[in-house]
Image (cartoon, rainbow, N blue to C red; front, side, top):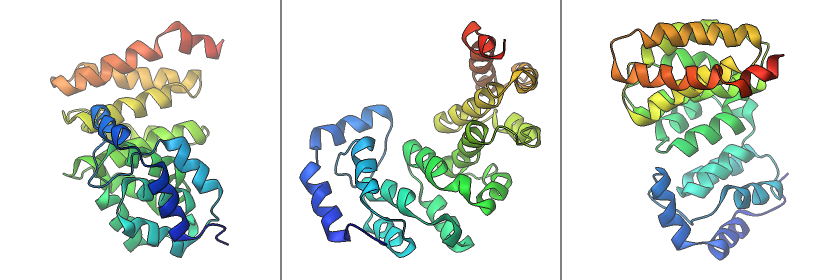
Length: 224
């Protein structure tokens, strides 16, 4: 049940609107067409005042502001997302933070999204491809018992992609897998060293970053 009406949310977003922060978001690589300039904690606070509601999420998404996209991922009912909506939303992704928040808030709860990792990983669209590897990273954080070796081949292949927001998500996926436990740390490091041997600039960047973190005392001390 919705506890806050759509018009109330838009009025609240307009009240909180910060033009300077909206402009500053661009410095962090956050792309958007329209934005109120809100911080994520502000959006999450509004989300807590809303109930989970599928139709309401669609209305927020169709409003087309950066913040209403993010809020939609928070209030959507994962079990009501069908294939058409999933494809539509993911194909709309235009910014790394929207991808990552969608993975954290919604996509990890949708079985078809997990299956689509093996489709999205081959996309020519930068943020669709990022979705595949951001979702792997998020699953590694929240579902540590899963078998992540099934993703190693696509991680290795995607490491060749020099696009900024793709290679960062590939690196993130390796690092998160390697922080699950000692066994996954070893497997992720083996993968990273394989990638390091590949003759691609992006692959070497991905591998070096992962190796540096996964061999660090901070990470290794967790497993002692």
